[in-house]
Amino acid sequence: MADSQLNFDVYSHLLTFVSSPSDLLSFGLANKDLFELAGPEIIYRSIRCKLSNNAVWEHLIANSAQASRVRELEIQRENPSGYGPLDERERLPEGKNLDSSGLSSVDYAEVEKSERLLLSAIHKMVNLESFTWDRWVPVVNQGEEVQESREVQPATYSEDIWTALRDHAQIKRLNVVDLGRSEVLLEGIRPIFESTIFTLGNLTHLDLKIIYSPLNENEGAEGVNNHNDDDDDEEELLPGRVRIERLQDLLSRCPNLETLSLAILDRSFYYDFDGNPFTNISSILSSNPLPRLSSLKLQDILIDDDVLAHFIVAHPNLRHFSAFLSIDGDSLPSSPFALEGYEDELIDILPNLLTIDLPPEPLRIILRGLKRPSVIRELSVVEPCDWDAHEDGESEERVSSLDDVWGAPEENLESPMEGTHRSQLKNLLIDMPGLQSIVVKDVVSLSQLDKLSKATPTVESVTFRGPFIGHLANHPRPHAELLPYIARWPRLKSLRGCHLFAGASVDFASTDTLAAAKEIAQACPLVRSVSWHGQSVKLVQADDGEVTLEDKNA
Image 1: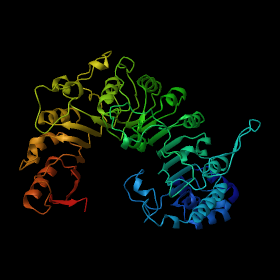
Image 2: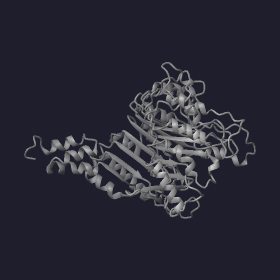
Image 3: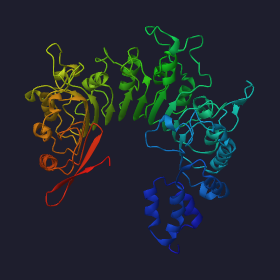
Image 4: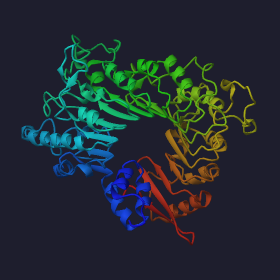
């Protein structure tokens, strides 16, 4: 450090303002002395571990300087299975289930000890910016006000993880997976949705995935017969029971929010009480301006059409938008919103949109109003028709909306003239020069595939859902029928839901299969992954042109 103009303490202090690990590494590579300063910053910048790893918390409690370097903390679930962030099989510790007689052996004292050590460690993590909780509900999570008197402002709470983050850290990113609560396993513990988590504020990124499990299981259904005892399936669903006032209050304190991902699953209310399992957040979107919002992802969330139409127009910086419902039923809506009748309000919208994942019907309306040319890269789910396509072919009684989506004749694919009303577009996939990925539903004929491939020459990934050209199911060489159309995607790397090989299963060593693979590789030289009906194949091309197949499921 002889050539340095600043001393160690100044350099060390300046490093606390460097957020990027790559920038820290670049700084440390300048010379040996600077590397010794940057090394601890890099090592302690991110911590990912299980709650039960008490040694980590004890070390941070005893080393305040190192704890102050932590910017990202992720509490991982004890029993990860890889089935997804809301896998209900992980609600209990490994080897336990609700029918187990050994539940009483769960050592709550050890869990509470770990949580309280974590609380003490958070006190030292004064620069913590990102926190992830991915396990069952905390034990130290009472969520009760200690003082509720009106003379006491603000109200104070018994300390838990959320108040510790609020009072001692600099949290900007909050990711919470609430696997719910079990009355048997965690009796008397409040669920996260009823905790002090909603007293946080100034977040820029919020991701909540919640299995709603209120203390009162009959909440919203008091005086109503259980679904299993009710023979009248024609009655209207009970109104959704999830109260969003506290969530709304939280978002009102996050004016700089950039990303919002919200999933609230209340399936038990639907299956047990014929209640609406979906949560309407229209009041939140209509009352909380989020001018910096760039990403909105919703699951089992409803939005009123008028509110969403205004929201879309008011948020031109939105880059990622997805919404879907996870439960189907005759009495349930098929889409989080419809937007029918709002075409005149949705004109030249979402100029910065990169990815969108919506049911076909509302997506079609948004595509009509999308500003062209569009910078969109990923598009899901488009549909060539408004009917339930079946493998028995197309019926004359069915009315195709193919021209409304991507079925216009090739000569009509030119860009719309200035001032053209978007609802008059004959092909909704024009003017998307950067489109890389598309998900398509119910392609039942080669003519539909023909028009799709002509309209989307730039895509690198194509996924087909639902029935797919039924007459190819028993074809001895389905790839021969499909390659003339698939080859129109010169950048294609991944193909899903399209059966290119004959038979229900693939013999990777057979001569016919390898010959088909070679033809596929010649027609689509960039393709490396093909998957369908639970099977996934990796195409490996050698320098000499030979092609081999690897089972990606093996």
